[in-house]
Length: 477
Image (cartoon, rainbow, N blue to C red; front, side, top):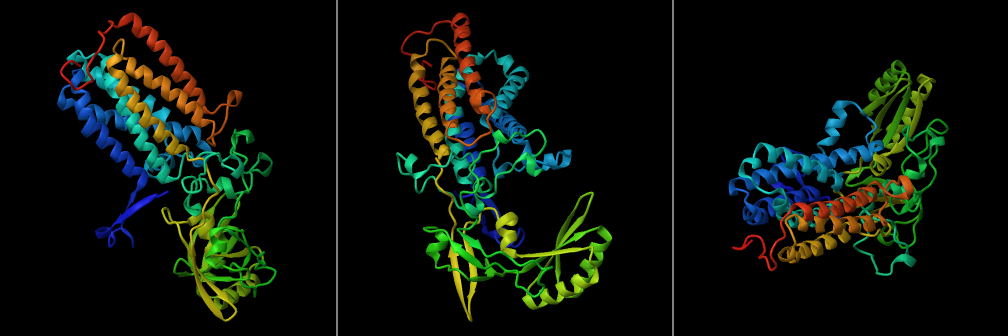
């Protein structure tokens, strides 16, 4: 997994310490556009009558409408991942395509709509046969999927089920593991299973739609000693102390040890984070007092009941002094504390970063520890699809001279991809619906059925082609 391929160096002074990131997922989408619209498309499409000057136009239309359709279907299928349903927040989430989150079948719907609009407005006057265009586009779609799934792998999304050691008929120790802290699958591996009874599922969700594989790993490969609450003992140090290490984990191999006190994270002090919760006026007064005692405010959140404000302290001494004063000032404000490590691991981990760099204190000594927590092994279904689509691309090109009528290459793509996707979905972690099938499996059934019906229709409406046709782009195509 390589969410960020690299940062553009000369942009560092304008866009943060590292500069503008080049995301692996976005880079693969760009490569798909280059291959289909600039390299292979200009060879195949003019061979069926599309004017050369219109090739890139149709490619851009299909690419953009396909991405839009894919994103819409994803946000609909995983609506629980977008709790803020306001138009502005949904729009902001929609454009973050570089973070992943698209569904191929949505791109099919969007691309079809874009094609028919473009055909009606532009291509119709050239009297080009849509089945001929479909045959030209079919291998482009297949190779585009092959490259696009590499982007999914780099992004760490679209993962398969956990592959237990007994299930691994083929060893998957490297391809099926991802850097845990930046992996999309982390919440499914680490967070406790959620239920309606716990009151933290969006209305309308069903427990059976959530993958029940939670609790397989710790967040970092080690557990922490229980923290003493600030209210019970204001003098206690709330920073993380290692309790135990997972045998064989990257943390265990790094030299981290039980009872290590974590005093630094990723080159920064492991600051203490104090959370002030209560009514707005009381929290505002407590915040003012905390800032006077050396705290640094780092943001708040509010709902109809209470306001929660976070304040950080660089040293244990300043934290102890501030908490003691806050607890004496206003008993209606709840004071709790954790550390910067907890914030980073739970909510604020930088996208694209893999390694966890810790400074630990052992008695009077300090040590530097660095390691990359890894997920348990998943089936790399992204790469399975890449391999399948490369093979299907070769099949489509090889079948082209033997097609009985125009449009049959597209029919073959619909049938082969539908079968592949149905089977690949069986080893992915997706919400299930009627008869225990995922949304994509149901769409696969629909695509296969549509392909069969399309073949029957084309057999009746298209002229039978002579045997031994040349591939598109050659003289007799």
